Length: 500
Ligand code: C2O
Ligand code: CU
Ligand code: CU
Image 1 (cartoon, rainbow, N blue to C red):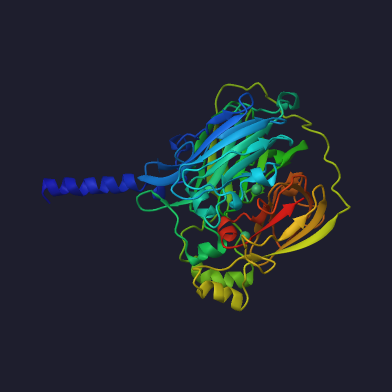
Image 2 (image 1 turned 180 degrees about the horizontal axis):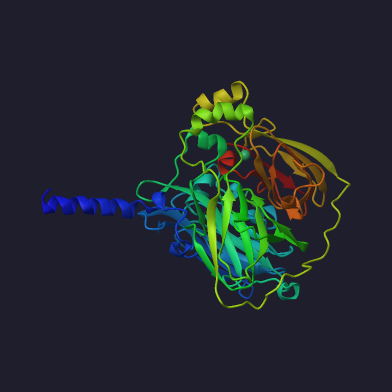
């Protein structure tokens, strides 16, 4: 081989290896080699009362891959962490700088329908939306994301998601860490697929349409298996599952406990230690983790278990082999490297907040919702073979219809909803409310993740919830309820209701 050819050959090899790192990065690599955890920009609106957001096109390189076409709020991919104070008004100015319509919803905020940002409030390209958010709810970690029917899945996947935190200024009294990026980490967990050049990939095969789209790389704040540096102290993690469909089973590989302090809609009375936490799309959970021993530790996830019952398995096993997104065993999510510094808050608090009231027992009305994949006979085959290019999803047998309101709820009412799922588990979310889980797959003593106030619950067969409707919503700007597997939502597993 002559020298030129040899050089050319080795260059090609070198190029191939630098272009492939996302696909080939060993998850067993020395954690010291990992990228550092990206810290989302903090926008504290407590003083200004103003929030300026621009939904924009981006060009983002994931690891050393080629740049990907992405979307973000005020940046290339994802958005900032917004911090607001309980009791304040936040005047939002959201510019849609995309070449397509886009709606942005505040997931977890208790605001009226006209400020909620559901699909009825899509902003045209170049348009501006200016809702005022009256923040009047307990401290919690909410988020915001695209909600453009039927393009939510693609837009969120491309990066349209950010975090919205509500603070009441009393975390010091509670003994809770709250310094963003120092001892309080906001972690947006998402799974993504990349092509041979390391570019973000979103192409839906039939398996993806049925199960929702899953990736084989787990990113935190946009980085694949990053490394966080923190003080040798008790640290707060605000975990958000911002994935389209993947359900995480999170734990530390050295067995250290996570002390849960909050679910979706606010604090728990005391920290509760857990070895493993299940986190479905749309859900948040906040934990304290004790790193006073100074040892490195890894947060890992077990495989997604949402593979369906025997019927689904049989039907889908053929399709499953077409996807590369199945992760077996434990997959690392994030590695923690405590430094030598300590933090101001260096112990686990005993109590955090007031005791939770007993769940309601008197209800204005009961409703039944069945989350349907239109399987079993014609509906599914029609959907799969029909012109829509995918299966039809629905609730109580009906796919989402923008023109037809599904329910009218009384303002101030507390209702009892029973939600049933078949074939797969579905994370069920309701806008503009918080609820208590009365029963889940474990029965009348709900699993740990379902304690406290929630706005999203993973329905594994059946869940019963007590929902408080405290915010008004007109028929023009109604609230949504839907499966938070975004491909299911886009395929019609969604409904909407007014509150008056
Ligand atoms: Cu997080 Cu209707 O969505
Ligand atoms: Cu929501
Ligand atoms: Cu679903």
